[in-house]
Image 1: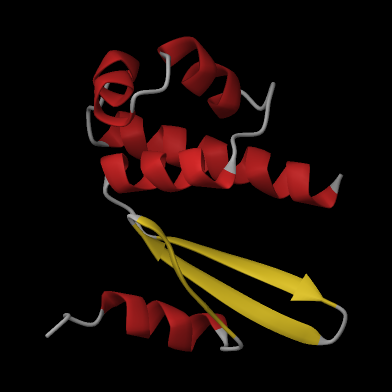
Image 2: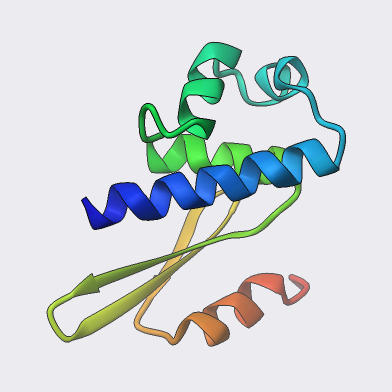
Length: 104
C-alpha cells in the first residue's frame, strides 16, 4: 500500500508539471506511445504505471526520475534517464549528481 501511495503522489506531481509546461495528454501519448486513457488513469491514481512507463513519462515531460529501493538494511538508488541504467548502493543525492553529470 505504501508504494501505491507514493506512486499516486508522484503521478499527481507529474500531472501538475505536465500542465505547468503546457503538455497535453494527446501530446504525451504521441511522445511515449501509451494511450492517453491509461496515462489519465495513472495520473488520477486509478492504476499504477509500470516503472518503464513512469520513466518514459518523466523523460517526455523533462524531469529526472530517481527511484529508491530498500531491501532490509540495503538501499539501492536507481537513477534513470531514458531507461533504468544505474543501480548502485548510493545515497539518493550521490546518485542524482552522477545522473546529471555530463557524459564524456
